[in-house]
Image (tube, rainbow, N blue to C red; front, side, top):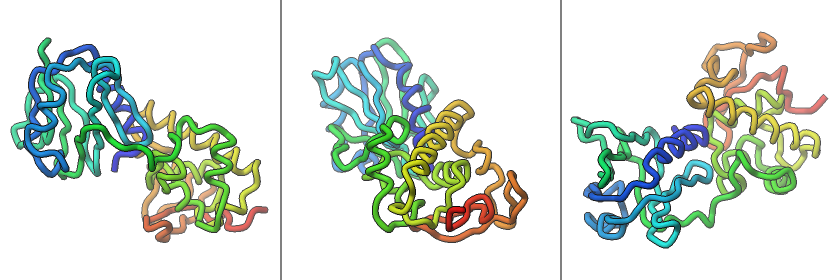
Length: 254
């Protein structure tokens, strides 16, 4: 599933179409474009100029006419990606697309049909972006309560953008157990966790996605920790399959 790094790379793709004027819109996939009916998004944004490509967590949006026009929200779903200036997909997997007056097109390509295109997206329930959250906000939003640390990182209302793989990568780098209660972490541990989250995110954006992480590349049943050689533990935490090293990431701090 695309996480913050994949969404940021998609946002960078969208920057390529900024300044172009929308000539035509294919919004006929009523599931991807829900709750809008066919033609509703097209009527709102045709003739508008794209002027900003923004992101919070896994959510993307495009502003039109310097913020004076409608806002188009995009979400990659489980397997979607943004394609720019590519020919239409012959399998029909371009679920939403825009053609530009200057030439070229942008498409939400999604085999699984779980992405979204929506007007005026509501981001009020999202926490701060995980790549930009301040130290104090991170301490207060993550370091509270009795929820397992892995579950807290996945809570998009606490901080936005961390998914299953990025959480496991970050916790391994920070040497913190995914099972520890969030509220028991010290300020030093929370600060270390934030540093490693930012580092893991930067590395994933640079290297092509969360699947490239130092821990993630060997994250599988029966594998051992690449740092110390201890067999990895595996359990469901926060509703997601979780891997960690019991030696490097003890349930109780030393």
